[in-house]
Length: 261
Length: 121
Image (cartoon, rainbow over all chains, first blue to last red; front, side, top):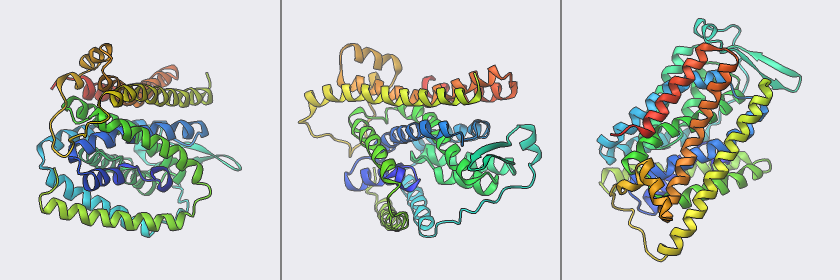
């Protein structure tokens, strides 16, 4: 499922585990982080070879996401699960909304790069049909800030928050779309590893639960990547949007009636 | 080593990490299910994992006792270590390029990740 929609599996996995199987949300977050790392690393192995991801951009922004993720994971211990459920519901609604109106993927290459981008040597090029195409990077501080927020969400909720990361690079920093998605995928794994460390030490990662989740997600992402080329993307997005919206409503309901955790 | 070769190696590293982690989890899972498969798990109430499944040392000790849960946990740790190894590998790559600013940036990220995993609470 994750590979099919370009969203991390966590956003589906956590509501499934908590709402359908009645798992405590903290166990669900631990298992989800594991699955996020598995999908990210598996997919990144393929992307890296194609030369799309910008490792400098990824690494620099990792400072923001890792700090955010650790902060989020620490916060998760202090916050009532009810509030985690409410924030999660809001994130689900946003994901549903954006899957109903897919953005137009026109390239909006920036004419020049920002001062921070030059200082950090972020400009790069990516392979296109007619040879390598050069691109500039803009609005580095705004992207950095958004990445911090993405990290906090990721650490608090146990999701990859890839959507926020793509938003930061694609919209704010004006990176080409393919570079944004592949770099975001690289970063998701590193961010999840940061919070997974905190969750591991706190005993939120249960082997009996994480084992089937990790193996299932790996098998699913292998199958999904194959199927992706023939899948009716538009119909899938709408189906995904409906499912997510329903999960969001149920998440809100359960949080408010105190049935979560 | 050219940039391209470097990226190929990076891809292999990720693949190996995930594959190895999955293999270890499968072995541990087989032992675990063999012993406890019939029990019904209680995940609806939260109680933190026992101390031996929360630290690197504890996990290694339970692996030596061939505990299924311990071996699964080792596999999960390998999986968590994969992105960390990737950051370390990138740091090494920047070092070879003598790109000191990015050596510093990746070392900082690496320290954060290792700190989150290993630092005692």
